[in-house]
Image (cartoon, rainbow, N blue to C red):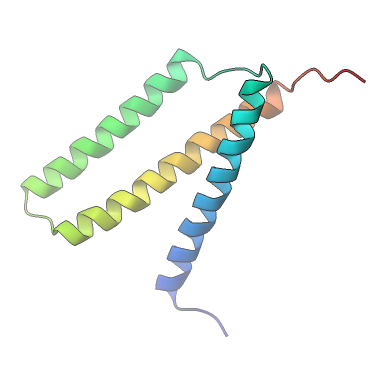
Length: 102
């Protein structure tokens, strides 16, 4: 039996969060072993995205958005940003593997 659409959205966000946390742990080990760190432009893009999201939610709050809706949407957006950041880091790790001595 299929779950309702509302449930699938929560399941997918949970899955994205779990995968992103696992990716963060792998990325932390990769950096500890001398892997490529995020570039300054990567950090700038992340900060710009976070700033735009915060500005959008500030505007929505100013225009009278409900607190519950803003918090719920904020959590979803930040989980998505975290997942996208870790997806980008995964691509960096694939492109720049660690030199393993055989």
